[in-house]
Length: 211
Ligand code: ADP
Ligand code: MG
Image (tube, rainbow, N blue to C red; front, top):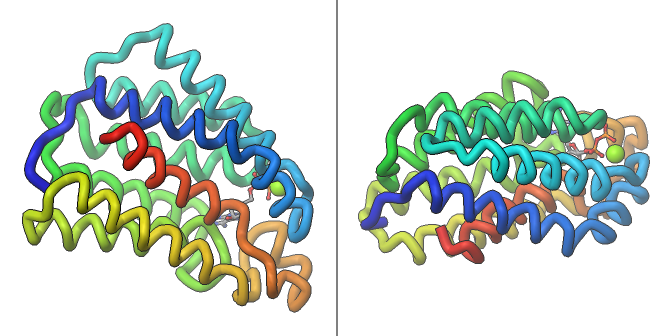
């Protein structure tokens, strides 16, 4: 990855994420209806709509201000597990990026790693537990490798998206060990995880924005 990104670029990424969540709301709900309680689409859509409204109003001028506002709004508007988890991801992104107005590829990858660590600390899930981590973790690793190799930004984001989508697809045969889906035991096998599907949309949004 070559270029740095600004707070405005990061805000466009979050707008694109909110748009994708709205577009995929029914699918996210259907996935959650199969192995959960059928609210994941509504949860993510409500949280991101409120988050976008909050950042549009506040017009944050640093990554910290942007992601802190977004994360706090998501946490306070979403009752389900995904609210605190995605909220934590955003809050950690904000802390890690701080007041850097020119975010380098390495900083972005490191911030996403910090966000991922925050989700792990909060949810206590591990890779293979059939959660959002299964899409997010491979994407962060792909981004770190691309940043270290000096890959162009568009190619790096595409690689991260592919890793997230593969991780998402790999949740289908997994047995859920965390969250509501874990209550189903063996019956969770054969269904794609809704949170991993949302997490892949976060990377799709970076490609769409483009970040
Ligand atoms: P709820 O399960 O409370 O109804 P959602 O339906 O919005 O919340 O979100 C469900 C998603 O949250 C799951 O598909 C899974 O990816 C993710 N999830 C649940 N528990 C955890 C956890 N402990 N760690 C990471 N992700 C989790
Ligand atoms: Mg649910």
